[in-house]
Amino acid sequence: MSEHLPPSPVHHRPGGGFRNPPGSPSRRATVFDFLKFLLVDMRRVKPPAAPEWLAAAIAPDLAALPENHLAWLGHASFALRIGGKLVLTDPYLTATAGPFGFGPKRFLPAAVAPQDLPRLDCIVISHNHYDHVDTAALRAYRWRAETPVVCPLGVGKLMRRLGFAEVIELDWWDAWSLGDMTLTALPAVHFSGRGPFDRNQTLWMSVAITSPTRRVWFGGDTGYGAIFHEIGERAGPFDLALIGIGAYEPRVIMEVSHANPEEAIAIARDICARVAVGMHWGSIMLTPEDPFEAPERFRKAALEQQFGEANAWIMQVGEVRDF
Image (cartoon, rainbow, N blue to C red; front, side, top):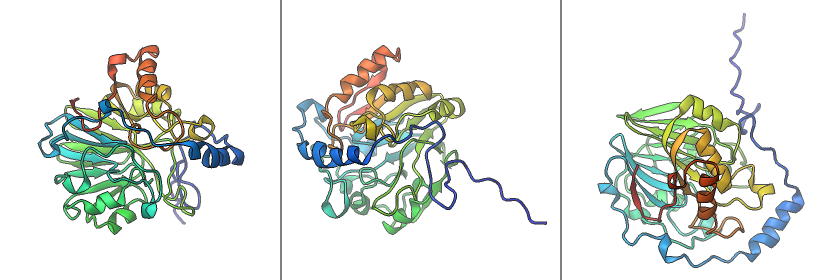
């Protein structure tokens, strides 16, 4: 008698690849919407001059980062020390988000150059998009043989090709620990791909980064969906949530993969976060909205949704805060 195989998780597509969790928004955009976005809206985009207040005056000393502190390096890249471990998220630290030097260019440099990174205890990758996996930055990192990388299913091949010796690939709800720090892969509403033929062939994730005293949620890239109530029930509450608030227009296209500032506050509420940090804005123009409107909308949404304006943090690039 043959044994029955257990059913595949619902986010695993039959025949290979992955899909968003149930209750995620469905695609409404038409071919015309995409053509207008690429050929009209984005051609009008001019990289802005970064306002002086956006960058901290002094670069952070990541090697000396105290316990339960984080530094925003720009976009979705944070360094945080938790459970005694120095963790880096989604390193995009060079000038261009794209292959072979093509793609959107930063209008504000990262707070730390990749060659100046100290030895890290762990690197966390949420998905394989170019503004989250910067191969030039990762090749410039000097401790690839010693530093473990935690990433979603399928992304490990790229990490090994970049020279990382210890790569841990996780499916949603899988966990991995290093001393007093635990990383748990959690669902997100997004997609993956680094070229025209690999869409959704690797997984995307958000991540719980926890220690005996702190609980942090890193959103990676995500739209809004019903899954965040489940994350709050199964993995919350969180002391801190790092949530994308930029790259949200036009909504007919971006609603399936990027939360707007109001949805970011809704996510923070759903996952039971005490404080939310707005990220994924202020470094690069990926979409045509005003790149500096997101922080004001984020704080206003926190007030209107009774999350508390003081609990919606807008950091400077390079700023260090205690969480």
